[in-house]
Length: 111
Image 1: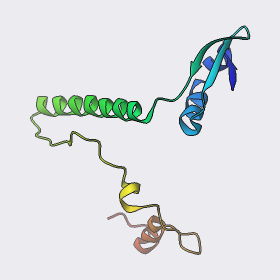
Image 2 (image 1 turned 180 degrees about the vertical axis):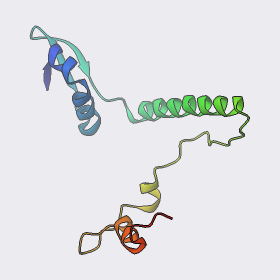
Image 3 (image 1 turned 60 degrees about the vertical axis):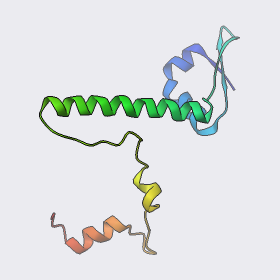
């Protein structure tokens, strides 16, 4: 796929999402001449970048908590998303999800 620099500038998020989701590379053209390639990172590099981001955010939070006198324990490795642990939301035959059923039982009360 080829994209012009102006279109890339105006729709960068869309193209980055496409690269991330499909894994395809995008050739960037300036005046119809290829000048760059936008391609996904290899999985090990993507994971390493994500780990670095997690560690930076972890350190930022720990420093902020320390300044305020709060003791925190934050894991060094990023936790898995809850959906990976518990699976996807269950949908009943009538279309209700777990949370909708809980709301129905509570009758609008917020405990």
